[in-house]
Image 1: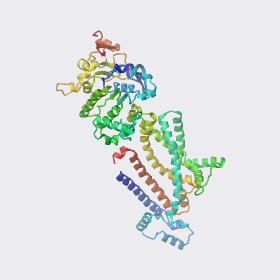
Image 2: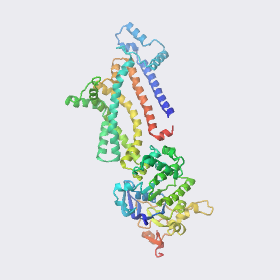
Image 3: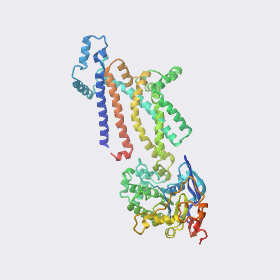
Length: 325
Length: 314
């Protein structure tokens, strides 16, 4: 089978809060091709996690999908009955969360939790335990069978994140959503986890949605990159295009600001001036206009549509209009 | 774990010793001659002298304290002033009635209150949630003796369905159970609302935690998430609360036992106090203190056993 594991079209989401509505995602288009790792980058609050939770249909109760369509594993995600959705989770679709310290249940042992998530499998208890131990071994946890008896509090953050990864891989998912899974880890562990993800993709032939604000990690393992800014996809394309030929002023600024890319000795890190716009009232202008160094009259007036720049590469910027190749 | 258990028990013993000293000094601090208070103003001088001698009141205070402690350590709580029976025996005769009453009162409150709190948390703002919220405030604020009086007026006097007085025939368990209905209901009613509110609050907190989202992300059925993932954690504060509840229930039991004329520690203390029967008062109070002091370490150990996070820090 080829094509997309997930196809998000024109997705918009609203959160109803006590202070009024917030619009965390607007007109988002993202494709996750089968067998590829797609990176989602953006600042905190750009809607990365909201997008992930929308794909899992685990958005908080005050979230409303106001428009768009999501095709996930050949199904219309937004119209799927709740029971069928639950059937996808943990089998064909899995997610690893950001904070390993709080993502595991503190009063159930690792083994119990890994058995619990296999509840659909007809295998015997012994087989399930063997499978869980195997999964732990694969993510580099020694003495796996003994570890199954232990509780989350007895493991370090890095170990817990590996346990979460092992759990998500038990059923060989077709789409794995990894939400900032390296943020809580130190550099060494991060490198190990990235290596692990790459191995897993080769082994499982699945797709990964890799959410991160670490551009280095994204450049290292992703095939495609989607740049989110304040709830809009400002640019997306193949990974080398995004990093070598960024077209949107925000992507350019982001790539330039990555401390790992700064080659000259400097005492000050470059910054993008200004703040992320307030998502309570969305301007009709380009969402980046207030911070853009190359802002034009038209940018303050109209919101730019996505412009296709190359194969699978597009950006929302008035500067690019008419340069379509 | 063992060390922890020993520490908690040691603390309970310390509490008992402190309360024993306080009890002892209470007797000393009562104005006037204890023998006169016990016997009344018209007692003869010989009788007073005999009582004073019997109670060891002529000895120096430290000796009296030492004798008092020594006797208690041997399980001897003294002798009843009136019947001359050993107080230990009297207390042991009455204790089971109070324990059964408290267990039944707390038991039905927990059986109703905990599921109700769970349901209220999961179906927040549903009719049942709002209904229990209103009823809880009501039942928490009505003292159990008021409930007891209304129960008697309605079920015993008006309808004649349930017996009013006593604890039932000895050996006839059915009769004893029927006699237990109203006192246990009166004792536990306030706790239904209290427990349901506490469980609701801690359930709401736990259901919002990240690991619940993880469980959902793995497609676990909701009843399983509630039962094995959320309630296991949400129940922990309730266990501590129940241990504290024992203290409150012991004092409510005094009223409930007095109203229903049930034998029990509460009624024993009230009757003995009315008759200035100090050794019985002391024995009864000491037993209640010991019960309460024991409930705390038991709940602490129970929590350590149920919660691996606590266990890991021991």
